[in-house]
Image 1: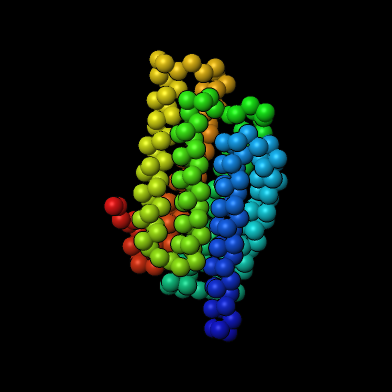
Image 2: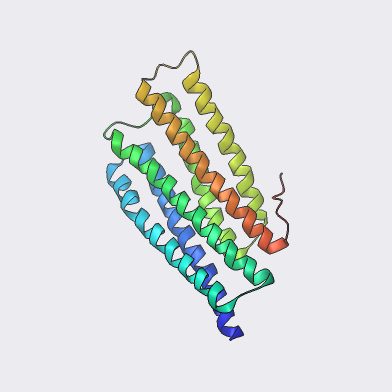
Length: 217
């Protein structure tokens, strides 16, 4: 029975990695759709979000089944409960990707944000893609150094997010009302994507070290 239980725990980890991989593909496609005004890629992201939702639901069902049958304790219990929380965060990250893609679809054939902000959003997207890929590696290896890297990347995203607000609220901003709304929403989606990744990184670090604190640089 113990061997079966350990195999189930390994399956939980493998499924988390699979979902994180789907999320990494999603944010990469969403970013490219947003920056390039690629409506076909945007539609792909929107359609594929259901795959993330289904995978997260199936993982939740597996975790709940393990809790009911195996009644794990100590670290094993923390693994299963953390998996449920990580699954929820990954599902929300997929939603953020979908929201970014939806903006690209709504504004097609135009680009979502004015030229003056495109460099900022290109950087926001690149950072979110990097975070998503690091999260896949973190869930695979439990290398806590990656948790620190994710936190540092999130700090950079926070700064860019604030710079978007400074831009659209500044006296030199010439964008229309719709440009202001789109830029604000898109920036928020990128920022929330990274926040969920940081939340996951903290949980993985806790499982690996017993310490909730993600060290800063």
